[in-house]
Amino acid sequence: MSFSYWGLLWRRARRFMVRAERDLAEGDFDGACFNSEQALQLAIKAAIYRVFGIRMRIHSAKALLAQLRNMLYEADRGDLADAIGDLISSHRRELEILEESYIERVDMVSIVYLESQGKACVDVAKKVLEVLNRIEVELTKKSS
Image 1 (cartoon, rainbow, N blue to C red):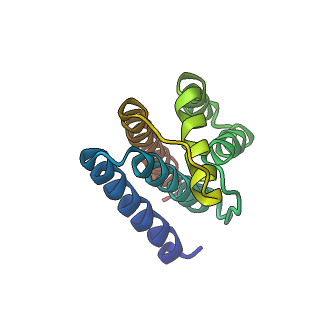
Image 2: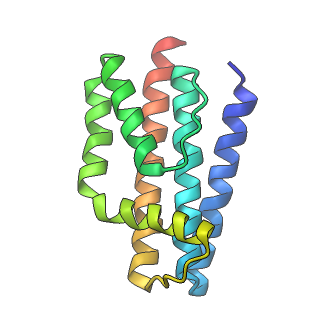
């Protein structure tokens, strides 16, 4: 397993989060949502790679979270899978906004996000990143 690939994904995820927070502060709520979604995609891919050694090619934070949850169940880590499932359930609307912002930005459609949506996107991205960090720490300390 290449830790440089894992590190690259996390560095990029963190840079996207910095951009998302800056966009939110500057009133660019579309950018805040888009960059939050990009951060999630990369961070989830990094966690899956570090824990399971698999490079994911999915471009949906929601789908990646569901995949990670399923992989954790298969690895007999229901406690961690449930944490991901709880995130998905309790932040379903925010995850939909994040995914929509990615699709809309890529397809150049003209949806404009409100401040409340931009803040929700950044907030949920931070929560997911915290859970991903916790999962990585929990699973890699046991294998070390």
